[in-house]
Length: 66
Image (cartoon, rainbow, N blue to C red; front, side, top):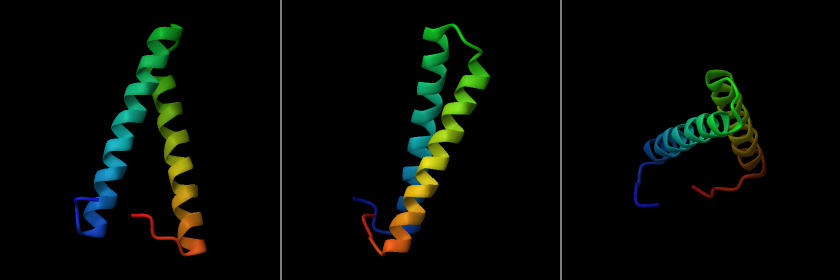
């Protein structure tokens, strides 16, 4: 909320969440002794899909949370 420009704020949120998803995917793979790249990509793509659906629905409904 401290970034005024909407597009910059959206980019910062996407970048931060992407980093967090990649870290959690990697951590889950290491703890579960699974292939790291495959697990990290799975978590990353699933997270991006969830963000896109949520963003699309809020735009469709007309909500402006950002």
